[in-house]
Length: 151
Image (cartoon, rainbow, N blue to C red; front, side, top):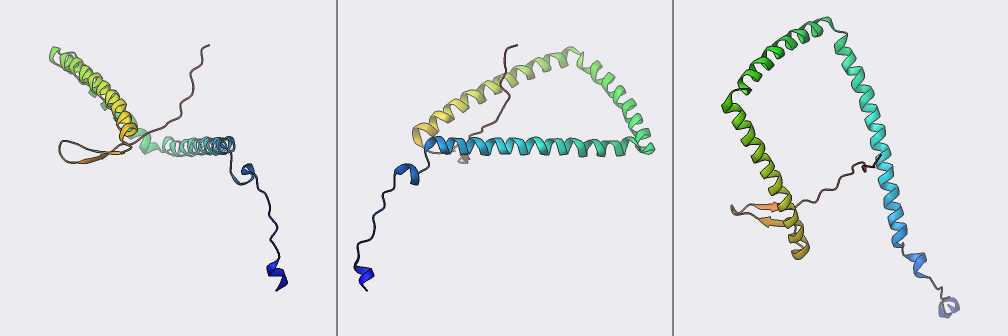
């Protein structure tokens, strides 16, 4: 019972021993990202290898090769017919209008994205209700792209 009455030994712990510093967290996250990038490269290499084997199995089949040649001939005829229709004045005008509408839609999406980012920042909400009463979720997307370097 005397052991229970003794004062426990006080051990000082510095914050760096109990808390992970911001730089440690960043390094850990960096390492995880790099591990996944390596894994994705390995998976892509395996996919390419298996895809090549799969493609070779078709190229070695005589019936497949014959049907493939027939399809290529039909596709040439289809391409010629498509070019003829595309060269009509009405078709060319429709193509121009479609291109303009797509550019307008792309611009509207970019502007909306900016306003959605502002909305989330200001309100903290990640949903918004549209005019039809549907609740829409605001999704943030992050991607990796190779940085373009000047040569």
